[in-house]
Amino acid sequence: MTIRKTSAVTIEPVAVPLTRDSQGTLRVKDSRLSLDSVLAAWRAGESPEGIVACFDSQLTLAEVHALLAFYYSHQAEVDAYLDEQRAATEEAWQQRKQRVPSSSLHARLLAEREHKEAAGDLAPPP
Image (cartoon, rainbow, N blue to C red; front, side):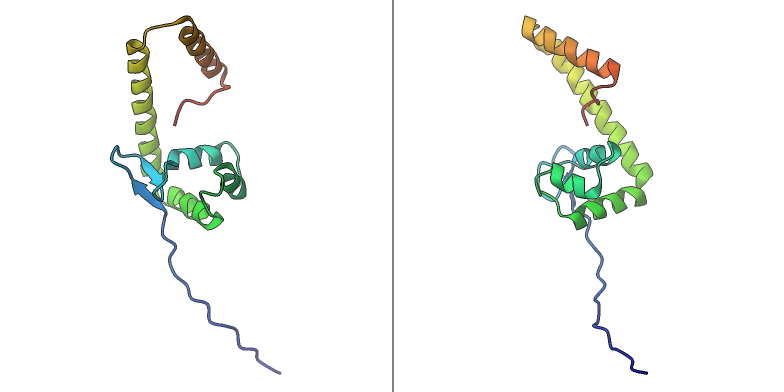
């Protein structure tokens, strides 16, 4: 019986490619791509390969898996962060609606957005 030697495999931890920008948003690497966007694609049913394709190769497949592993390892904290981000976005949106003068185009766009949100056709901003 012959025993075959296998090559040595080096096992190294994979770094989670996240940074926090000056406004507290978790960004993927040093890009404008947010963790919120990656998780929104995942929750919408995208596969890890689909997420890579969605973001024009800003991510590698290994990075997507690292982000998902990070999410599942810290789900409660990340979900709380996402809730805070949604609340801050909604607050900023409401403040903007109050500041921006209402033109007919602007009013139509707002009405369309609110209609789509009410119908569930438009997810709230991440």
